[in-house]
Image (cartoon, rainbow, N blue to C red; front, side, top):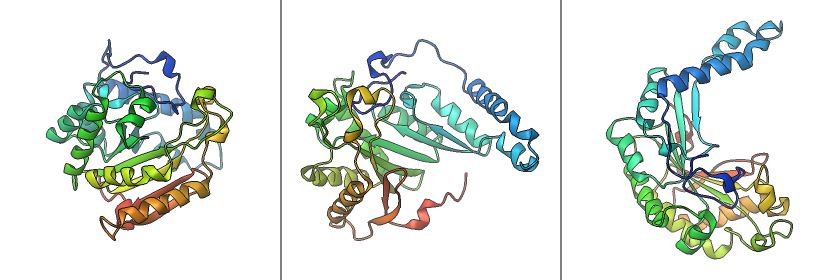
Length: 275
């Protein structure tokens, strides 16, 4: 619940956000140990099923991927570098999703050789006016912080996998009246998204559709969710502009159930080769 932003499309109760000041800092090793303890408890019942491989069951008790996302902003945790290093010691991979409001933490991870396997920068607006309205950040210089993180992303080439994630929302009529016409997927915005991507030069771009779940349903109805064909069409238009920067950009993958399209330069880069 600690996060600088109160994004319009967020499924969490942004009205109850705790801001960016953490009053208690837990030990990173204790956090990871408790995660594994809870995971083993969750999987206990599968050990009694004859059709379940006992070898696979025991392997599943030890996580091989830790994802920092879904609840709050992970770069607010001041001991994040220690946790990343511990995950690496345990021969697991890590995916970190950030809103880009703490560029100094990204630099700290870089400086201390504690970068995640993949760093994903989440964005929902390519200009200051839409950014301020969409994110309603408690940081007065939120747009500037985000753009600083964009430039840092570029400097991390070869040090970790880098991704820009765009969560797109269409117009609708069933949510809060003030938000029905708010959208971040007009054609006019495509060159601005492309400029942002060229600045950061990520390995991947995730173009995905908003999902009306959780508390987001109170703000934006299901009709604000783009159809998969709309995400594909928008991705193709974005790709046309990106090819002006480099003809290597291409659509690498897509998934209708997740309503997402992945753009990148080399499909081989999608495979994680080492921890």
